[in-house]
Amino acid sequence: MQNIHSIIAGKPVASPLAPFDKIYPATGEVIAQIEPATDEMLDMAVQQALSAQQAWAARPAFERARILNNIARLMAEKNEILAEAEVRDVGKLYSEAVSADVPSGAEAFEFFASLCATYHGTAHKWGDQMAYTMRVPLGVCAGIGAWNYPVQVACWKAAPALAAGNSFILKPSEETPLTANLLAEIFAEAGLPDGLFSVLHGDHIIGQAICQHPRIAKISLTGGVDTGRLIMAQSAASLKKVTLELGGKAPLLVFDDCNFDLAVQTAMDANFYTAGEVCSNATRIFVQDTLKERFISAMIEKTAQMQVGDPMNPKMQMGAMISDAHLQKVLADVNAAEAEGATLCFGGRRLFPEGMENGFYMQPTILTECHDDMACVRNEIFGPVMSVLSFADEDEAIARANNTEFGLGAGIMTENLGRAHRVADRLQAGNVWINSYNLIPPGLPFGGSKQSGIGREGSIYALEAYTEVKATFIQL
Ligand code: NAD
Image (tube, rainbow, N blue to C red; front, side, top):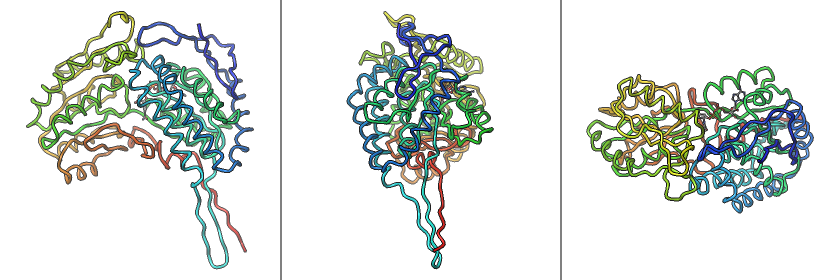
């Protein structure tokens, strides 16, 4: 069986610590053993990162851009290999991984390559004195990843960090270690100098050591809200800069002047894509009461046609969930919702697809008759479970949509242009989608307000977060 080593300065490094299992979510089989990194390995990665970083930052920006573009090209060439590994990591559909996860990672490199050489500072003149500012890299940056989009999470963090002249250490989720090592190989093949990108495997123990390491300047986490709090606290002693991409409980407001079919499909995509394991998913569907019965019937009819099973089978619309423990947690959340008075209109049960009976599958699930104070409406479930609520008018919908500690995404379905912008303006969320959902083209910032996080990824704001401003004053 394959042993998954950490990669430091381009080379696999064996760990003396006991390995743990990597399970393929689609079948429940153990497919690899992960060797957790030690503190000594972390020191080694940081030393390599420190010595490689200054030469990297000193290179002309267009040379860095060329290497980042090479990475994007190689990722596109190896799309199928990466996508297959992503499926073995996450259990999500191959059709999703090959069309969204890998391309979106590659596009991050293309996008930040295009900014490298034009990321300038400012110049100032006071009388006969002058000053200028530059954005300078932070040094060694680290990324700690969630398990739902391992390739995208790695690339959205590594690409701006490297573009800005930093070195980068990645700790992927312990549930999804496979693609990180493939990315390390691709980066090396693309010409990225050794030491600039290392991968440390393991769970929160090595994660905590990364946060506490005095020579790491910045941490970017994608994970749960509680983990975000821990990361900030652990990083406080060394005053690291932190970017936190955390959880959500986003609303989708469906007004009675919407395009009905589009709204039904959008609500389903915003809940069942990647088996609902998407942080920005619109898991609170607010439907205007005049539309409610027709909307729910249409959703049940379409959801009942969804095929769930082998993620490599192109006929499937939903693959497996990440783990047995997570599946059990989501099923328990559905039971709790029923106990609180929600109506289980569709789904809610575990599935055992033929030949893959030990995989972690469940039905796409629709809960109706929900109320704002129910746990299924307040808390992130992170599975294919939507809660449907109804509202009478715009003001009520906005107030209830905003009545949450989260603020990652929000969506509006309406054909009324004025309403679309008026409502978008009042929704408290980092990303608002009108007549669409979860679309994040390269260059658009992504991230949350309130408890959903700090900072943004995927845009010039990410480059800002991996640099700091330095002012130089000149007495002429
Ligand atoms: P998690 O918070 O359990 O783990 C995330 C990462 O943090 C893992 O790599 C884990 O090993 C590490 N970690 C855990 N405790 C740590 C500690 N004390 N110190 C350092 N590292 C630690 O999250 P998950 O279960 O992997 O992912 C699901 C969560 O991620 C959901 O809440 C989801 O909403 C969120 N998420 C957010 C985004 C976003 O961009 N906003 C994207 C995807 C997922």
